[in-house]
Image (cartoon, rainbow, N blue to C red; front, side, top):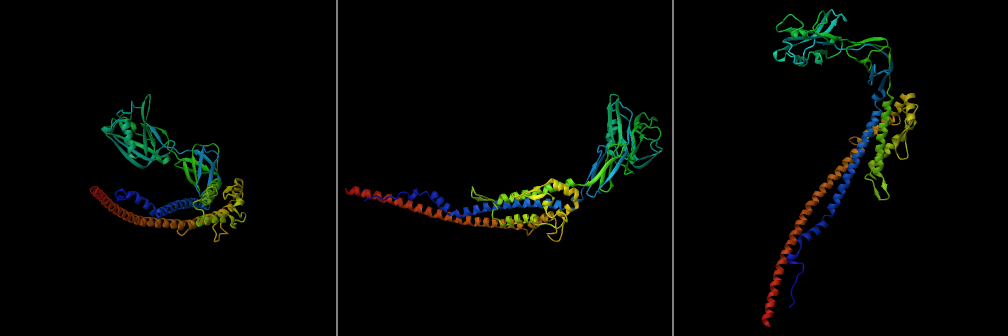
Length: 478
């Protein structure tokens, strides 16, 4: 009889390979879902960038339509080494003649020389009073407004420790030690400038020896009569004239002496320093450049994302995206529609801002400068006027409104982003559900093929047994 054989069946079945190949077919719909999810995430990222660039354009337009920008002023000084100047938004345009007769100063006093900074001085108390001397330059009295008493004990009676105690007391003076080849001296200086930042020091020794040249008494000071310490600088107010009007200040920084104007007095003058406050045209020019850069960045991104590459036969991520195309159209409409906000300028190109064939804006600096210097208010209107109608509004006001509209809670970009996010979530849910089905299918296939393998193994064994019996029978018959 012929032998029975089953090549490739029985225990020889590669169940793993068979199941893997079958599952690869089953997984094709999941692969398509994963590819779609990747495309959606790429699109979401592209819309996110589009949103960011639109926000930057909107913010730049808002800056150009801001009241603060058009009220901003710039101040200049003919001699900044003598008089520095800065202006705030409320500064009124004008010119000022500034004369500086006296700078504000601090009071400074110095002690006698000691052998070294660790020399023992003595114990007791130092009463430091802040106030002002009357009768300068030869004082006849002192009017105190505050006082602090510093106690000097045995543990802190050296010159350097007395310095540290004074500095820690918060008395309105600072103490330092100046050392040279002849020894160390304690110097006290007002913490603030001004005539009312002068000070007096009353030294009281634990055991008074009656001498001001020994012990803690060496650190006493008074501008009236004899004093142990020497005054090296007088506390004084700054004295200046602004357009012939005398002003005084405890500080060398004169704030709001003219509305919104801050002057910094650096040195005395022999002739008037000219300070001028003008509208800040440079700030407007920078704001225009910032807007043009932001607009071009947005326009360039839209062009890149919506283009079609004929060589690769592939389109940009946002090609055909209605939201993106609509935004591009609205941006161009803002520029193409004339404005009646100004009686002089009706289009952006009239003030030097024009769009090229590539959709990019460029600035004619000469035109813009001429508008700033000759028709500043009309320029402001064509940029920033906020009217009830689009036609009557300035261009930057329109761009700001467009940005607010598309970025708002119901705006084009917001709803587009939400839509894509919803698609991604739905796709992920579909993937999860399909993966469950695949797991069940794989388990079913494994059970079927394992059962088949078991059956084939049993049949293979039976076949071997029958073959053996037939062979034995044939042998005995012969």
